[in-house]
Length: 397
Image 1 (cartoon, helix red, strand yellow):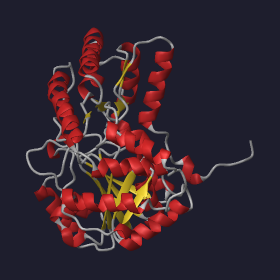
Image 2 (tube, helix red, strand yellow; image 1 turned 180 degrees about the vertical axis):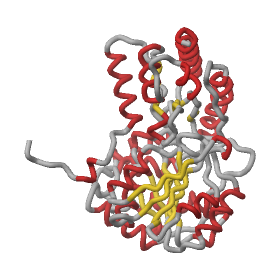
Image 3 (cartoon, helix red, strand yellow; image 1 turned 120 degrees about the horizontal axis):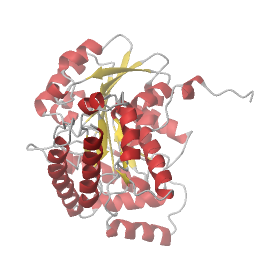
């Protein structure tokens, strides 16, 4: 084969979560009763009124191209959402609709990152952040956090990571994979550093906003630092809040000139997101919101039962979360004691083979020694999975 691939794609790793899902599917096809805790999507169905809006859109012929950056109706619905839920004011020219928040972020990277630019990525991080930076010919600067600081960066760490090449900072709250949420005080402290560097843009990835059960009101960065409006791009979407992962609708809100450049990237790659999905997203944002409360309560209930159960496993410890639907238990002691197992990647494979449970290695999230599990599945499956892990560990230790 004489055709060479690009240096950009050579730096990128396949998605660890999708790899785990694929392996679990393969084993299931061979007849194994695998419980997969790897994929990050709600296990609830999309609400009926949202599906009906999609049917209606098809029936009236809304099956053509839309504006590249999304329909006026959906962008206005997003504007209204920010105003009513977050007390943030945007106009529709400051909104971009994409095929998922993931594409919004990719568009942003392509729009503002030049060769050698640095992007600060706190770890643990969502697996795609560093690779998106590399695909934009940038350099991910990883800030490692610890259990003691609840897996959240502080102002001192941020200031120490900034260089003349820093172009972007990513903040994800609630976090995938930790479920941790930044408090008002923590955001204010980060904001003090950010405003000293007006050339640096900030991504506030709020995709898990509605799956938050902390004691205090949910706050995004612009709520506590409104003067940073010209630097912040806020990402969100309907995937997690309305169990619409397959519909692929995300949105970005930010300075108009940046949104314009992101729209330009999208126009030369995918063009507009699905017209039917956009109609459904309008119904999601404008319609009844009681579904969100039901789903949030279900995830909180699972969280409250899963975390104590994980802490009872031999050689395992797990911090509680503030939101999302992930647990990130530390298996370092178990790894140290298990014969033939040297890291979390090997442990994930061992548990898949010996416990019939699929989880994602923490190394994929910048958290070696940990495993990420999603509790977006039935409590019965969660209890069975943890019992299997317990039995496998006790038999081997």
